[in-house]
Amino acid sequence: KRIVILISGSGSNMVNLAEHCKNGSINADVIAVISNRADAAGLAKAEALGLLAESLPHKDFATREAYDERLTELVAGYQPDLVILAGFMRILSPVFVNAFNGRLLNIHPSLLPKYKGIHTHQRALEAGDKEHGVSVHFVTQELDGGPVILQAKVPVFEGDEIDDLQARVHEQEYRIYPLVARWFCAERLQLTAEGVMLDGQLLGLQGYAAD
Ligand code: GRF
Image (cartoon, rainbow, N blue to C red; front, side, top):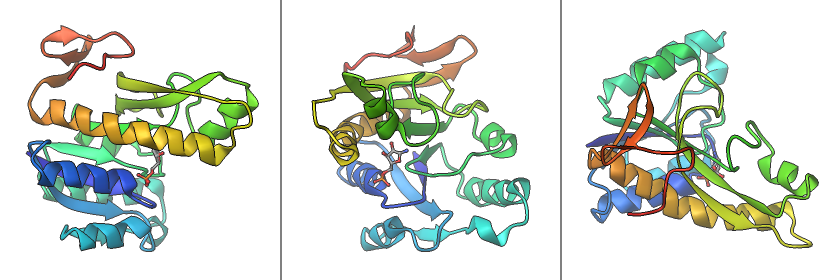
């Protein structure tokens, strides 16, 4: 299978996914890594892995729609089976989301439907939550609102700061994102009108952690 990964920042999930593709645990190749920021640290990491890395800066475009149309063309040109958002910090308009419907994944650092949007670790701390986590979901037009495929929970300890939570969540991201990508590339995972199907079974909201 052919995977295109979109990033904006450090790209640690992208590196992790690319390594899983290289060692065969995900049955796919990362065809391209695209960033909306030319200075994203992840681009250099992608190049170091021998991947095709390029930037399409959103600030070169007058409107979100103009950018998203160009991004859609660029990504579609790689003929991906799967498009993975890995810290891609832009809201995508329908032109993009519709073009890759059913083959577009995102990872969001909260236990969705809690804390859609940004600053999720801070919001979990401020709310005094005892647990926090991360969700992998199919992307639909509703921001961070597409059907959840798999979640992982982490505890929140007394005295935790944002960095502590972020590190604990990242650790879980590196487990669950490759797992979901592996299922998808093995054709075990589909988005249907009824919801997410894994191995022909409709998943509940939270999915399950079996491999
Ligand atoms: C992750 O925490 C992910 O959940 C969020 O953005 C962050 C990306 O981190 N969507 P990295 O760039 O993969 O290190």
